[in-house]
Each structure stands twice: as structure tokens, then as C-alpha cells.
Length: 276
Image 1 (cartoon, rainbow, N blue to C red):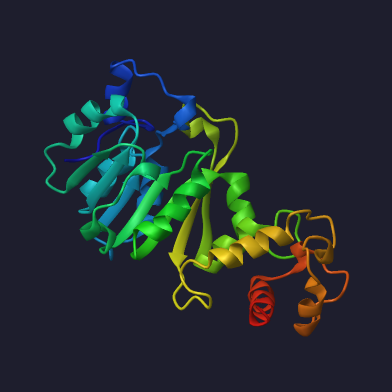
Image 2 (image 1 turned 90 degrees about the vertical axis):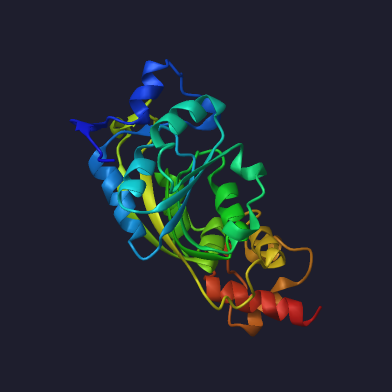
């Protein structure tokens, strides 16, 4: 199927949604992208090396359509039961389209799919963005690339560097797991309904050879504790003498969590862990 357009707006399931008078649910974070040029840029970030794509929240199907037209196999996870019929009507004839209805955060991924090399793409709902990213990390063992759209402020926190106001435990978590690229910023006018803030598309490449393994939950708990009172010195955020270990890796007695790099956090955790 070819993608047709009316100016900026796709003639896809988006129009079927409108014709069925389906109101967008704020609780589901539904803001449907309608600009064809932006959709093409998002799909281009995935590249052509990965055949299979997992799409979380296909919504009106604008990204789905272009993925299918470019030859990808699409496994789409949609929470809103009202969208099942228009999505099936639009894409049901594609043998390369699979629709899984239900909340992705509560869905058990088929084992066969979880082992495949996939790209993951989603316009992440603002209220569940981080939870979805964490589940993707555990669900798919061979993810090649993730392309996510999310709130601009959250995206900036993900790439923030030590010593900046927005650097925090989220920055450490994301930079431990991924190489991150901020690809493009999108104005609210390109969505329906329009959100109140700008969105950013990010490209994530999962890192290999992570020094603490794939899911070092104790490490991330340790980092979050350090940021518990971010304006306080590091020594005030732990119930033991953290500075004994901090001094071993060259950190001064007045250091704050926001000044510690990812590599330093890893070294500090390893020092603490070594002493049990």
C-alpha cells in the first residue's frame, strides 16, 4: 500500500479514528502525530538493517503505515480497545502486521519475539515513558535500536552531563544502558490533540559489555540514594561513611551527586560493594 497525504495529514487510520468520533484519552497520553515529514524522519532513524519492529502504541497508525511500506515486519502493542477495529481494517491485509491488544506494561512478550533482533519505536506517553523503557530492556535481549518520542524536558535529562542542573539518576541510568542521540524536536502543532509541551525524538543504541551486567538494580538504587537530596553533599545522603569510599576514587569531601560522572558512580559502587 502506498501512503497518501492531504497536505500534512496522513490518510490512514487517523482519519478512521476521526470518522468514528473516538475521543483521545488524556489518561493514556494520546497525542497522535500527523506530520508526514516527521514520520519519515522517525522511520529513517531505524534504518533498514533491522527487519522486525516492535511498535508500542501505534495509535492512529501513521508510523505503522510507513514501517510496513518500507518492508518492515511490525509487532504493534496497543492499549486502547477502541483502536483495534480501525487498525485491523487498515493493516489487516498485511501479512507482516501483528496486533497485540492490551497494556504493554502488563503484557508478557512471546518468547520467540523476545529473542529476535528488533527495533523498538514508540511515541511514549509522558506518564509511563521510563517504565516502558525499563520493560523494553528486559523484554528484548537483541534490541538493535530504539527510536522514542517523549517530552523534551525528559529527553534532555537523559543526556545531561555531570555538573548541570538536569543531571540526575535518570541520566546515569540511561547513559549506562544506551548511547543516546537527540534526533529532532517537534512542536505541539504537529499532533492531535496538541500537547502543552515540545516533544523530542531520541535514538538509543544499547551498549554492549556493560561493566555491572544487564540489570544492576542494586547499583541504580545506590545512585538514586545519592540523589535523594541533590542539593546536599553526598555524605549527607547515606547512612554510612560514604566518603571513605569516595576518597579512594579521588572525590573530595564536598562533592555532590550531580558532580559525579557515570564512570565514577560505577567505581564508587564497586568500592562499597568490595567491603560488603
